[in-house]
View 1: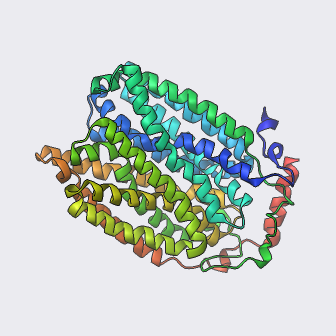
View 2: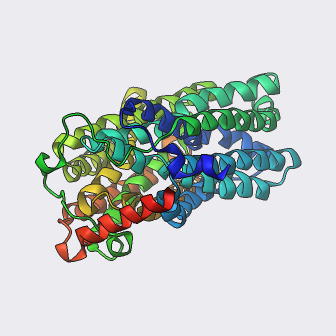
View 3: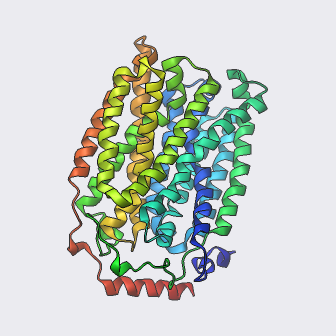
Length: 457
C-alpha cells in the first residue's frame, strides 16, 4: 500500500496529458467544499440540539480552524509525500468526520458533532485543500493563476452540489420539507454524504499524478518568461518566508478578506430568510447560487490575475467588496435583487482571494516550497473561520435579545466587515517584493530536489 501511495509511484510519463489532472484535483475539492453548505444544516441543528446561533456556528468555525492548523502542520508532509497519499489521508479524515458527526446527531451529543465534523473533518479539510494545489502549479508553470483557479474552484463549488443535495436528502429521509422532517433526516443524510464522498475522493486519488522531472509544457521556456511586478526569480524556504513582512501582510489581507466573506457564507440561509421571509428550500437555492459565485470567482479572478497581477486583483477584491458590503448594510433589506447581486459578487471576491493567493505566494517566494508556505498562510483562514461567524452570530444574538428582527439583526455586522476590508486594502497596498537576502542559493535548491528524487527511487 505504501508504494502505491508514494510520490515515486505517481510520476507521470513525459507525454502525459496535463489536462487529466484538474478533474482529479476537483474530485477532492468538490467533496470537502461541502463545508460551505453548512448553513443548510444550521436551523435543523439548532432545533435538534435546542441550541443558539453561536453554539451551532462553532461546528463550522472549528472545522475552518482545524483546516488552517492542519494545513500548516502537515504542509511539509504533503510536499514530501505527494498528492495521492495526501488525498487518501484527507478523504479518510473527512469521511470519518461525517460518521462521527452522525453518531453525535443520533445520540443528541453536540460535542460529538464538534469532534467529528469540526476536528476530524477539519483536519481532512486542511490536508485535502492544499494537496492538489502545488501539484497543479507544477503542471501549469506557464499559467499559475489558471492552475490555482482550477484547483480551488471545486472547493467553492462544493456547496453548489451539496446544498440542494443535503436539503433533498433531509426531506427524503425525514418524509417532508417541514422543519421537524428535516431534523428527522439529519443522521441518514450525514451517513449518505460520507459514503458518496469516500467514493469520489478515492477516484480522484487514483488519477492524480506529478510531472516527470524532464517534462515541460510544449513551447514553454522559463528563461524567456516575462516577469510581472512582484514576481521573483528566486526561491525562499518556508522557514525564511514566515519571517518576512510580506508573509504577514498577506496573512492580514487573507484573514480580513476571509472574515468578510465567511460571515455571509456561514449564515447565508438564515440571513436571507430573516431579510425576506423566504422558505427553507428557497434559502437553500440562495446558498447554491452563492456557491456558483464562489466557484466562478475562484476560476475567473485567479485567471485574470495572470494578466492584471495578484496585488491589483486583491485591490479589486477588497476595495469593491468594501463598497458592496456598504450597499448591503444601507439598502440590502429594501431590494431582493440588490441583496442577491451584491452578496454574489462579494462571495466571488472571497473565492477569488483563495485561488489567487497560492500564485501570489509563488510570485513572492518562488515555487520551491510554495505548498508548505501556503499551508502556513492558511492559519489566517483558521482565525477568520472563528472571527467571521462569531462576529455575525454574536451581533445576531444581541439583536434578538434587544427585540430586533429582519435586516436589523445583520446590519451592524455588515459595517464591521466594511472596516475589516478597509484595513485589508491598506495591508495589501504595503506589500513589496521580497528582499534577495531571503533567497535560497540555487545550488542548494537543486541539490535538495535531486536528493528527494533519489530518496523516491
